[in-house]
Structures are given as structure tokens and as C-alpha cells.
Image (cartoon, rainbow, N blue to C red; front, side, top):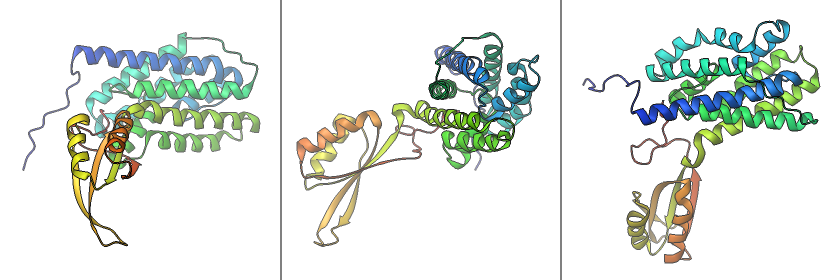
Length: 292
């Protein structure tokens, strides 16, 4: 059977295009502030292609790190085209160019007089910048492309990929920098990887909920009516009592969790509820599949 699905459109609506450009520009500015204002003055090294660009810039200070970053990105865009899609490819070019120009022209001095605070702030800014850019239809290039590819193909979280790649680079440069600088860099990498995952996932994190209650029928109707989420009714049996049970299963987002718990407790205070995080949910109504 052949698929009638056409090629992925480059642009959906003018509103979405403007929102994507806003995300890309804001994300690039945040990263540039962290790189030029904290990383370079403190001789910290971030991960991925940006880290390589900063290392080369240290040895060749006459060449701006932004242009080095852009040069290293060129071979990675073929991977974005083949493995993710043409929309991601073109938006990632915009993201890489935006970061390149931001690194070249945005210089905001930051001096907190405490390297630990510098490292924490740098991780927060870089993680926020990369995460905001990934909320668009593209990325900033570099390891972002690899992260999106692994997320789509193997469901490996973006934060974990960024952290692993960065640790490999950190191991390579440990002989160049002082141990103190490397440890501060490790803080930057750890904080940024966690912030990236938080910003990309945000409040869209899906929760899988199991509910066991004698009032299962009423709870099921209220979930359908008030929260507008589907409910699956499973047949179960108590391991000790051997009594037949009805188990409700539903998937909601993080913002609906409080409403669901209040709804259940209002109907049955003795209800047994199990709530767990999901890695990925695929469905057009409640799914949190990436948009690239």
C-alpha cells in the first residue's frame, strides 16, 4: 500500500512562521549572551560544536567563534535534510545563522564575582536559549540536529543526548584547561541539559493515570465530560481478595493533573490512583510527539 502523504510543507501559517522566527531569535540571543558574557571571559567550555568553536577561538582569537561555529555546521545540515525533514533543515539553517550573527555582534558583559554563579547562570541561559529555539520548527544546528534525530528515531531525550555529547567533548579538553575550569564547565553542561529538557517539554509532559475505585463508572463519565480525555476500562482482579475490579486508564497533560485528582477525590476519597510519567505519547489528540 502506498502512502498519499505529501512532502512536509516548509511553512504552515504566517502566524506560525513569525512565532518560529521569534523563538529562533530569542534563543540565539540568550546563547550569545552566555557565550560572550560568561563562557569566553571565564574560559569555560560548552559542549558540542559550540565548544569546539570556542576552543579554536581561544587559539585563534582573531577569528570570531560565531563564524567558526557556522563553518562546522555545514556538513551537519545534510543529516538534517535526510533524517528529519526539509522544514527542519531550512529552519535549522536560520537558527545557525541567527546564532552566528548573535555571537558575532551581541556582547553583554556579565561579572558576578563568583565563578559558581557564573556557571549556573551560563547553564540557565544556554539551556533556555537552546530549548526556546527547539520550540520552533528548527534548531541552532550542531548537536541539536543529532539530538532531534535520536529523539525521533530512538526516543532518547534531548537533554540526555546533549549531556552525553558534551561529556565526550569535556573529556577531550580536560588536558587543555585547568581542572577547576573543567569542573565549572561540567556544571554549565549539566544545568543546560536539564533546562533544555524542561523548556522543550514544558507543561506538555504527559501523565499516565491508573484509577481503581468502586465508583469507576461515575469517575469515567466525569473525565470524559469535564477533562475531555479518553478513558480505557480494564478488567482486573484483586490478588488477595480475588474480587473482580474495573481499572480506569487515561493519559492527560501536566496541567490537567490537579483537576483530575480533585475530580476523583470528590467522588471517592478511597480511590487508588497511580500516576506515572510518560516518555512519549503518539496520538493526534493527546500526543506529545516532536513537531519537527
